[in-house]
Length: 241
View 1 (cartoon, rainbow, N blue to C red):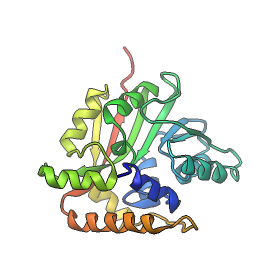
View 2 (view 1 turned 30 degrees about the vertical axis):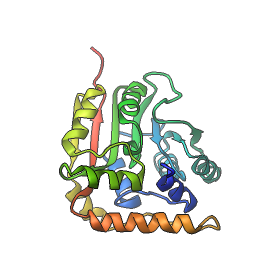
View 3 (view 1 turned 90 degrees about the horizontal axis):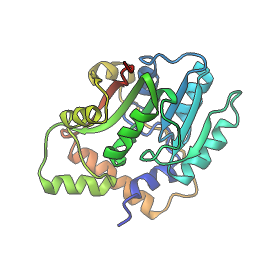
């Protein structure tokens, strides 16, 4: 089975803001970041470029978006062309970021890191952030440990290497070097975002496999609605002494 079926599904549907809370949550978490005119911002897993364009147009930030999927990169590049100050879009892996150490003021990861090898990607996030830099991540989280059968089933649907509790995530962030990590209250953000959904842009690329993956996703979300959730993490790279 193709491990990247779910990511391919998102690409075929050209999904914008493919994370819980949609664009409303994106705006809410960005407000928590000290982004100002000219701030260097890295959007990891930029997808169709929706967040990159928002950061560039609304905050006048110096935005770079990376994504590994060629279809997503193509769509994002087309999208940013209309901007007065277009974001830079690069095809690259979160596990091997093509940037020098201490490059960005802020980094965003919206339901992306869980789909990577977290022991490689998160240290890369830490490396490319400037001392004093901020990271904000929305990540798939399980409410408690589950048995192996359920874990394998969920992993097979989404093609992820592992499933992590809040405590697991905190350990991973801190192991990568982030000493200041806060879990933001999801309930508070839900008051703002409600049940906002991603935006699907239906294209001629929809095929039988796309519909099959969509049904698998919806069935999994319903079956594990009390287990599968998400957390919002805010981390800082402490200033060097």
